[in-house]
Amino acid sequence: MIVLSNKQLEELLPSLAEEHPKSRQLETMVVNRLENRWTWPGTEFVVDKFPDFGVLMCRPIKDSPEYVPWPWGYTVTIYCRNAAALEAAIRREDFVNWTQEVLFWAIAADIFPIVKQRCEELGGTDPAFKENEHAVVHLLEPSYVSKSELPDGFHLGQITEAHAKQITSEWTHGAGHNCLPFFRYLLRHKFPSSGVFTHDGRLVAYILYRVDGSMTHGFVNPDYRRLGLYQVVNYDLMCKTAALGQPVSYASVRSWNEASLRSYDKLGAKRIDPTLYSLKWFKDKITRKMQTVHKTHTVVWTDKTCGDTSTATDCFPIIRKRCEELGGSDPGWSENMSRGIIHLLRLSDLVKSELPGGFHLGEITEAHAEQINREWKYGSPASLSFFRYIIRQKFPSSGVFTEDGRLVAYILYRSDGMMFNGFVHPDFRRLGL
Image (cartoon, rainbow, N blue to C red; front, side, top):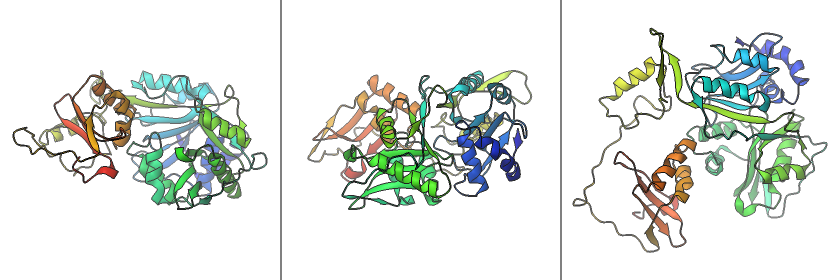
């Protein structure tokens, strides 16, 4: 693949502008790079050939210390002029770094089967994404989008980095360890956004802007829905980006999200016919097949990022070395990370802790799995399946509930005999739960 200079990117812009809507994401990313605003560090633009390219892609620069991972880690965005070009490019050794998980972000639905097939050929799968799911693309321009008035008692205000934790916690997928740094980067570097605040300063509705030009992560607090606040923040952000030189904004909405689809219809946004253009995602995950250096056969090495989590310290260097020999690494774990200190609990040795008034012990059921997954800082679709299994199979657990039935403290039991995933809701700490 050919890494493009800024001068070469300038040469591509006129053709990208003529190939909307499919080229809009990459065109916006290129424009932001050339204007040195709203850029993403540690990334590069590559093509299969120049200037008459068939595939244009933005991808992380290999081993770049500047790269800020998207919420799902190593993320690439592709614009493809024709399927044959992608069929050829995706089989090149220098296409992407296949030795790690790759998220193919918001790719056109018509080329999705090519990406999915290649990932599966290499042993990758992604159980988190549904086969029939896609995102409907909407275009927003001040000339035809209806202005939405702000109800009394609210005001538009500035979203700052201090709100990153709130946004992370309110996002459906916010439990991943890359999410908080991702939102912090957007807000610290003044990516456009729009937020609605109550009179006492609470952020209750918002939408952000992403490096690919998408209006994204729109959210309205459940207590303040049906007031038109989602339309307000969309209209406000559209006007901000237009004033800053991006005349047309766009947003993609999952096909099952009827509430958001209705909101964009009320705004007057132009919905692109999904049969002509829609977006899909695929995260190449789980098992990777890799050729060893001195052998001709293929070895299969399971995902290094989730195995051997409780390895004895004296054995750890051996396992780490072997993983690295096979191309594995885990940047999420530091060399000097503190060791897990083991505690043994015998009934005869322990002091009984009394339950404070207003609480009771109760049964944790499979209905609580999503809450537990959301409250775990490493929660993911895979861990949700794990929690559902151990609860469904009646692994021992303990939970403390409030009088109104809220689960506010708990600990689970794992198949290796460990008591783990202990958690107490922040509002109920220091009570001995």
